[in-house]
Structure formats: C-alpha cells, structure tokens
Image (cartoon, rainbow, N blue to C red; front, side, top):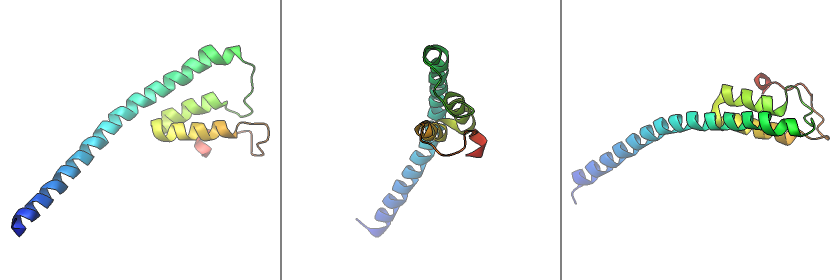
Length: 106
C-alpha cells in the first residue's frame, strides 16, 4: 500500500467514527427522553399504588419520591436518577445532615 492510500484510509476511518459519534449523541438524546418518561412513570406509579400502602418513612422534605420526580424532570434520566439514588441512600435514621434537602441545592 502506498502512503496516500494509507492516509486516505485513516482519514475515512476518522470521518466514519465522527459520524458514528454524532449519530450516537442524537440517538442518546432521544433514548434519554424516552428513559426519562419511563422513570417518571415508575416514580408516579410508586407514589400512587405502593406508597399509600406503606407507613411514612422518609425523613426528608421534600420526600424521596418527590425529590426523584423533580430531579428527573430538571436534569434528565442519567443525572436525575443518579441524584435520586444518592438521596435514597441517605434516607436512613443515622443520617446527620439537614432534613430540608431540595433538588436545587444539590
């Protein structure tokens, strides 16, 4: 192979990888919106059907489920669900932090 064929192949590979990256970003945005809707639906299902049948146990204001909804709506599926998981892991009797913990603060 000559050097210009090798260079052309390398440039073509870089161009294809950049196009794939751009299309993956577009697909991720669409998938993220769909995932966000699914996660919000799951939290709403929990609040409507499961939470009323259990005793109140959340120590925070707003509650962990309300916090999860707000985080998902404001930050999307990835960051919102990560914030919700961190909040739920903090929700135990030995937590020494403040009880008022809004989404905007984090």
